[in-house]
Image (tube, rainbow, N blue to C red; front, side):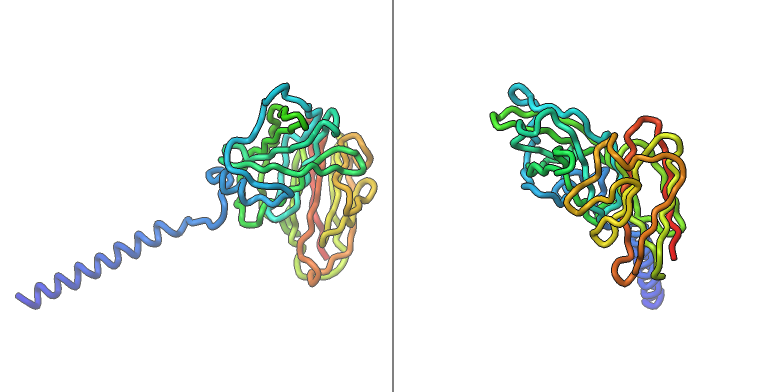
Length: 274
């Protein structure tokens, strides 16, 4: 009888161990480590890297007369995590702006950012780094502007998509808005050809490698300027390519910036690696 009871006890313990092992596998197999843009908006907002101060609470908007006015801003941007994102916007009078506020819509905190002016266009822009640990997904950036008398504008929104790093075998496509994607160009040193197809509606392509602008369909940007506003030089149609020297020992990743300004535009970009 004692041997029977011992056998049953061992069998029961073995079954319990199997049960918990299976539960552990089921509950951890789908874990994703990082910030989910869809479900962790407050954490995402705090994790942003930009020139400003993060503040808990509701972002200011629609205060007083609601001035100054935003004339134009990108309605959509796409970016790879870990890549510097420029979001230009045009306002009626730069001298009216004393404060800029930015938030991930739905977050419980916001940023009071410094006014940064592009010397080429004399218009402001946001310079934002979305950290590499942010997962793929979508969210909205919302921002408002305040003047020196305490008036704050209404909010403006830019739909934002975080996309994965591409590689030499992948073509990326897009449409209107600003797209900033990173490519891993592999292990071989040499010249990279970045092909593009802009179709009939004109778009602009700029290439940034190891912190420097190395190619453009327009005037090559300097490290003191940002992407040009719509309607300026560099917007092209049809097929073409840009080339630059690549060394994986220096940096394996290149950043491509595609600007599409007109509704209905479409484009494709793909690298040919050494």
